[in-house]
Length: 103
Image (cartoon, rainbow, N blue to C red; front, top):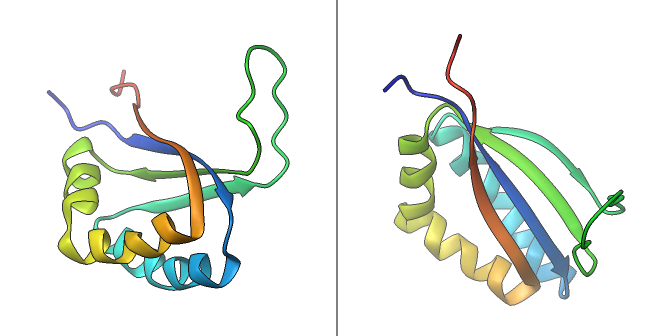
């Protein structure tokens, strides 16, 4: 199967901003290490239909392939860094969405 991009969808509520900032500082170098690209974030997302996340920040970033996304998540440095996210936020979800193959 051709590698397709994957998008990471995140919803979290920042409970301890200083702790979360420690996570943010280390996040981008690890994202780039695996070919990741930050797309956007929104602290005031609007849900037009269905059930909205309780509150918080919506984040979207992507990787060139599922293998790279899984390698990023499994990276021991990322897992160590993510302790700051776990301590500084209430995570609602971190979801991987596969893109469409080229046509």
